[in-house]
Image (cartoon, rainbow, N blue to C red):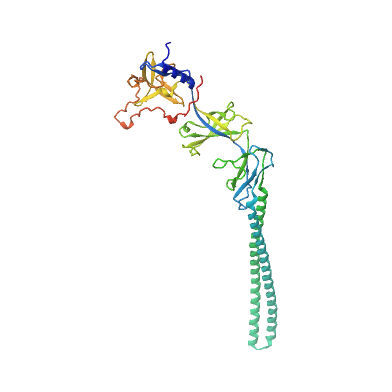
Length: 455
């Protein structure tokens, strides 16, 4: 074999350093005489994967929260005074965290003062009711005596003149009516006193209950583990973990969790370009940043329907959940995973590197090397991965194609496929439906770095 020119030697060395697959060769371009990178069409299994990074978390966990009745005590903001280190293994009833009680001191004083006022109002209402009813009973007794006097006066007037007798009857009737009205008023005053006592009694009970709740909340500011497990801090909306000094509110009461480490999942986010490839049930191979030698398997269980804007991300992403199949007690929530989601697997197909496919006027083609000449061979493409594309028509296994256009590529003959209509305007001259020129995948849709190929 004649020695390669300097540029050919440099290209060959670059391919070796970069780890180019063995199917890629360096050869002299028959058309232009310069060295060109040539790839062979290979037949075999074609796999399309979407690679993302994720974070492990437990699918099931017990949440450790602030006291559930803090809203009843009108406490809405609390501060974590102390908390055990993350990763601490605790038993049920062990101390987990202490909340700052300084916010409860003013509330306790306020509720105690309100209770004292309610007790005073209750006592005052009881005294007023007792005094009013006692006076009403005394008035009734006086009226009864006055009625007796009027009755005696009527009996004595039986021997008097008719006008005197009539006046005695009238006085007796007035006394009887006044006594009957006084008895009705006494019943009404009794009902009023009972209603007043119920009102002030309810307020007194309410203040007693509030004081009891505040006291219970104060005692519950010492938070213990409801079950055995490993303490994992809760993350806030901004991704920061709650620890000593963090604020907790009654609407988001989580302080820590006790995860079930036997049921783990990886939460990852897929960009809007690749999310259409990801479906529930697809297989996933996972790696751990903490242990690159370990391999885990999983299954996609959930794909979000709505995208979101993540911090420090320019494009919209969609949340994807991947269940971890293996049970591994060394896995911990928060570990970073590399997720390779298998979106397509085709057996026994032809494929070439993406760089080999070009296009012009809606016709995809490759620069095929045949013997000592190069032609533009029309092809029909299929599925596409990050590095390669499936060829369904136009090439055979072990055919050689150029990865870069030769110097006189536009002058080469275009070999069309039998019956091909690619690039041909539809009948009737409807230019609005004319096929658009074929455009290779944009660089932005390709990965920034290509994983090293296996030799």
